[in-house]
Length: 124
Image (cartoon, rainbow, N blue to C red; front, side, top):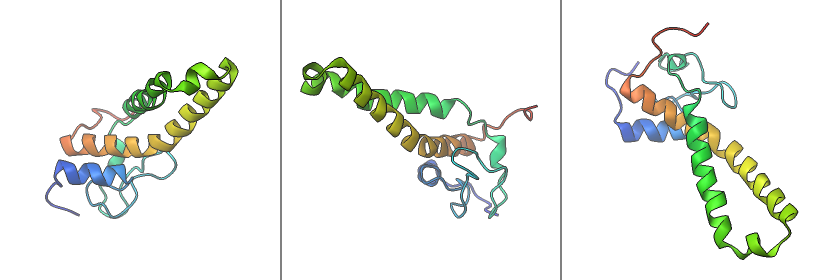
C-alpha cells in the first residue's frame, strides 16, 4: 500500500486511464461504469467515492460542445434535410457519450480520491 499520496496530475492521469488513482497498477472499474469496491492491488476503498452524477454532467457538457456547437458552423447543418441532420447528430452524440463517459468517470474518481471527498455514509 502506498504511504504518500500521488500528485493531482498523476492521480488524474491514472484515473483517465481507468486505473486506481492511488497506485495506478490495477483497474478502478469492475465493469463498464461500475467502480470496484476496493483496489485489488493497494486495497484503497474506491467504492467510498461518490462518482454518480458528476461524470455524466461533465460528459454531456463536453460532448454537447464538441458536437452541437461546431454543427452550426458547418454547411452540413444547413444543406441536408432535417431528418438526416438529426439522425447523424444523435448518432454522434450517443457514440461520443458512451465512448468518453468511462474515462471521465475515472478522472472524476481520481479528483475525489485526491481531495479525500468520501461519502459520509454508505448508500442503502
